Length: 150
Image (tube, rainbow, N blue to C red; front, side, top):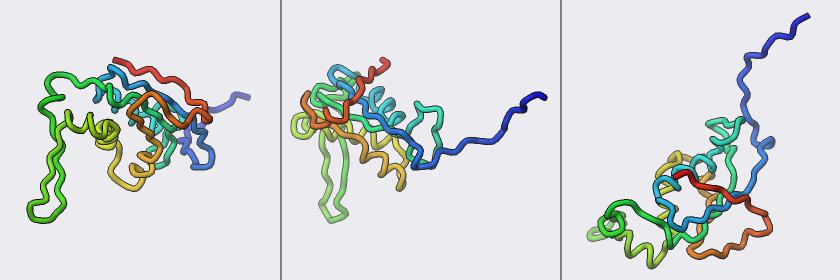
């Protein structure tokens, strides 16, 4: 008797997902390339049980956010635009200023742009932890070093 293959599509259940912690050193890493790989890990696309509508991703800790690299002249030219919806409420921040004041926001903004913009994306985004310096409070979770492909 021969065994037949099953052609059923596997769908992960929220309780079955095993989450690990990854740590990334952002020093001299190109922002966009790093953000794309972080978004894939947050979504769980690196796992064989990836399911698009379920949070199958892992936690990501990013350190040294202040030392992230930007290609070209983006450090001088790139700006972030926001508006408060009040008259005269335009706020334009340059990357150069933001890297000095709140370097975490630069990485968070880049990763958020690569996640789905819905309830699942907001849930995924909560698993991203970004720190300006090399110290982080997540040593107890034993994060695994993650290499960024350049």
